[in-house]
Each structure stands twice: as structure tokens, then as C-alpha cells.
Image (cartoon, rainbow, N blue to C red; front, side):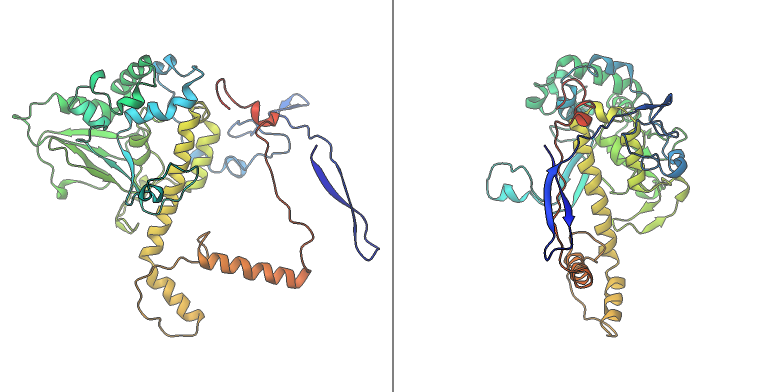
Length: 410
């Protein structure tokens, strides 16, 4: 039984506290009151008892128009979408068809010591996505050079854990509706002797908010690549990096979630690695902030609860993407940060240093920790020492949680 502390007598020299039980909360999803279902009137998501509309899509649905709904999942998904194993195997299925691999600029710390994979570890490097047409486990290679043959499937060991019918269904869906997959198939059919310089150019910001994949039969120079374009694949098999703020990031890395190659959150303006605008094209930028964009996506579309394990990976990816963007911005604005520090210290300038210092606004930095300690000491000085150290817990067996799980999920 959960416990709570109740103060009963504050007149004594020391307060008397009685530990007693609390009543079991009665929480329901989408409860009906006076004939009305408890849900957001704007995005229609079910609300839990006590929740108010607004946290999901903004006050009066302010941010909902900025996040267009995703296209319906293709009919080929019917072969696996109701299978109890799809949640747990969704990461593997996506891995087989992912056009862009997630990589880091440095190896993971535990790999340097030949240790087993820990439950939690820090990534002490930059995270990025890359298209590798010649890598043996690349879906691009599988389609471009190996003809999508089952005998050449990437990640063969992992692929053996997925039902073959699922793989066939995914192949058929991508070749039917995914413009990048269709362009790869078209490029693979071209004669290398007749079209040695053929390549695929991906373009953002089409009218349908999806990737526009264009096959060029002649060589495309860097000067010819316009804003919101990227040459991703050519016959030579050269590798391409996807910029952190690119809207191509999600459709190339998560074809299971975005089979139509729907553009994700990002900035269409051409920018360098530090986020500095080179060629402004703000009309095609996503107008909502990253947090509101993903909040609406995750709450309003059922696919993210269906593909449970893949959604976990997706969340980690977009979170590290956000941190990476902030770190790039901080790195490129060190002069301004140091000028502000100099003003606070009463100095005209600070000596040049190679280190990059994180500001107090970056959670987890030393300056953030110092600020938290200073605030805590100031609060204690004003109000006295704290009475209780309160922790919040969550039981995964609570009915409010288990009632939302799909068949096969835990």
C-alpha cells in the first residue's frame, strides 16, 4: 500500500508525523462524463483522469496545424502489423530496410575495454547518419547492386529472426510507395556503360511533404545542387552524410515508420555543420519547435505504439539529435559566450583557449550544476533546511499502464 506523511501537531517542539495509507486513485482513460468522452477537442487523443487538453497539441490546438498527419500505413503492413511479435521485432525489421546507418565519431567506451554491453552507457562522440552504398549490410547496396534478392539480405543473422513474409511485405510496400526505393531500383537497371555518371538527388519540400528522388543520367556537380537537395547515391558508391538538421534524417533512417518517405522535423535552409544559414529557404522549414513536433507525432499516430521497440530507438535518436544540434550551436558561438563571461567577471576580454565551455542553460554542464547548488543554498537560507526528501516512483503493473499495452507488449 502506498504511504504518505501527514503533519498532525505543529505546536510541539518538534512536529509529529504519522505515516498512513492513502486511498487507491481511480484513474481512467477517456472516461465518459455526462455523455462526453474525456479527450482533447482538437487532436482527439484520449486523456487520463485529471489531464487537461493543451499539453498534447498546445493551447486551443495551437501547434496541431503545423504538424500534418502522416499518410496511412500501406496495405502490405497487414501481413505483420497485428502480429504479437511486431513490437519486439520492429527494430530488426527496420534495420534491414534502413537506408542510413546510425554511427558515432568515436567507439563506445565499453568497447575499448572488451567488456559486455552494459545496460546504460554514455556516447562520448558525435552521432550522425550516413548512406553507405557499398557496405555489405547496407539496404542501398541490397537494392542497387544485389537486386533486392533474399540471398543478399543485409544483417543476415538478424534477418533470420524475422518471418520471411514480413520481409517480402516490406519490399513490396517500399517499391510501390517509397520514392527513394523506386529510384534505387531504376538506377540499378541503368547500364553502367551508357550512364556511368548517373546518380540520385534527393530534394526536400515537395508539395506532398515527402522526399522527391530524382535520377540524373549525367554527372551532377556540387555547383548544380540547389538548396534542399543532396546527391546521395551514384554508381561509384560514394558515401553521403546526412546533416543533423536535415529533414531527410527520419525517412531515410526509419522506413518502417515512414514508408512514404515523409519528411521529418528539421530546417530546409541550407546550413553548415554549425547550423549557420548558407542559403536561406525558411518557407520550407518546420514551423513548430522540435519538442512540439514530436509530442504531437507520438501522441496522435498509433504506429508509434504499434512498433514499440523501434519507437524507443527513435526517441533516443531524436533526443541525441537535439543535443547534437545544441552542442554545434554552442561550439560555433564560443566567442559570444566568452564575451558574456568576461562582462560578468568585469574583464575586457578573456584569453583564447581551445576548450569549449557549456553554458548554464545546458543541463548537466558544470555551470548548470553550480547554478543548481547556488539556488539550493539560497532557498535553504531563506526557508530553512528541507523537511522531506521526496521521490516519485512508477509501477509498470499499474492498470493505467497495462491497459494501454498491445498484444505481445510488456
